[in-house]
Image (cartoon, rainbow, N blue to C red; front, side):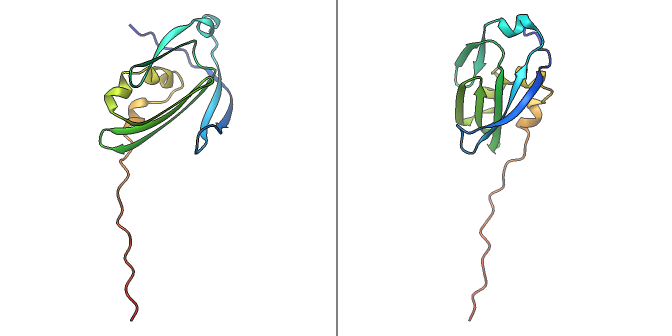
Length: 128
């Protein structure tokens, strides 16, 4: 059973310029010394796993592109990841909901963002 993580303190915020566009991110301080030092396996999309303690540098950007299609950019300490097409189930099976819950972010709410509408170009009337 997954145990909930304690809320970290946000020490600072910054933009990671290794992503384009830059990714908003945070430096985190986890109050529990044992947690900060405990190395564990974290589940990421596409069957990736990351062996690490809780992240000290963290940023995530999730964009919904279709009814069940998401693009994700992730900063975890010094590691950077980008996925262009993930399903809701692929995201729910990761450790991201657990990390975000500790920071007070509702992952389900992030997944429910509206799908961008495809707008038709505005036609200009012909001038005679």
